[in-house]
Image (cartoon, rainbow, N blue to C red; front, side):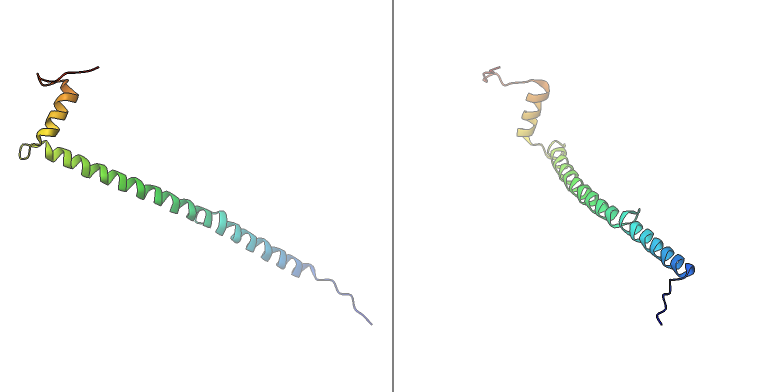
Length: 99
């Protein structure tokens, strides 16, 4: 005698609910606000922002250097000459200007 038993409706509902719940949590772990894809996006954005920060810090150092070179305490004559030529359009009397 062989007995052909089919699973009961309750066990089918339990396994279906368990499957759907695990599928939901898997989807949330990969696609959600705190999922793997979002983490990769955040890391890429952090690297970009870090590179921007490094570039801005270099700009600040360069500008502080130029500011210090034009201050009253320390006067860089070459920089002063360069600024006078570019901003004011000045030239020395012995120079020939070619346009």
